[in-house]
Image (tube, rainbow, N blue to C red; front, side, top):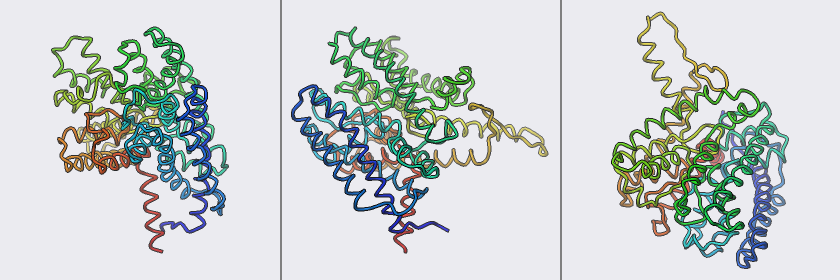
Length: 494
């Protein structure tokens, strides 16, 4: 029997959304403080309005809809799916007030891109955006990359079932510790450790490049948020190409890979066996797919100099495969890649990084399982009919390749591929080249942020709405959204 929510369930969901919105208002104080320190008057007004608006919405939801029931799985999935949409709408308010966006839809697109750690941007005159607004753009990626709903509700609720629901609903497949709350705190612990390391490294490189100390520190903070949380935003319109630094490109590549790694693997390397890094199934899958795609991307670029091949090939591929979206060349240069190189980037974006990481897309685990299943079937056909064969893979421990894991891998892969293709078809309907439309659709759904020039303020409103939906659905991996839609339909039939 399908569970159908009633008014008490809706009140409970809205109450918890109100609590989360108040948490979002707390995050807005960070760019507000930046505006005060930098004496940026207009941004100070923008974020004061943004904070007050978020507090008003949060207080209204809490007071008007008191929680009627203990938080359950139903409430978890609703809160996740609608919470992310609400965050992006409220987070868009100070961005819209900045004057760098042609419409509220453009600002909403930017906020969703940030929270979903995508990196596609519709900002106008980005090079002259205030420090406060740039801080907010990049902070949304740090919030979204770690999972704001799980982090907030792991503190304010003691409902174990609910916390597990928030964890799964935000697109995470496995727990690190038996307690989900402890898992959430470990994720934040890892993130803050790498944040200190990343900011230190980036600041040193930027000082070496000649940036003055304050500018170097701010840029280092923003670049860390964008690289470790595989977001792809940058404070300059030229993205990473603005800095003209091989050192910075190399450093960001390292932090992109760290952000794309399974947090569970980080835990094992930190506290248990460092050798797990060399045995892990996802790492092996990443190395295999990356090497194959690197060979394919380099075939049409073989006449380039080695340094140019790194700049144009390797860096774009590592950015695509980790789901970051940093680029050291502009979108029109990417658009000018030979077809085989573009297809290689598309496949890299489709696959993405590890499960339980900051990345989106199909994920390495599922791709590895599908490939492993294919090999397992070949071996079965080569064995006697009476033989029983079941394969295993090593992910922290030896795991049997069960039917449930195979079914889950094919299900999620099918959903992602379907949305990739549907987005491309809609792009073609608007008159875009099929390969370019597929590239942009995959980039949005897989939360990557690389672009071939389709994503710009002048693109049709329908395409903006499409990419907002794809970024939202891809970041949450569809499950919480589809469950919520199903529950709404069952409630409507009552």
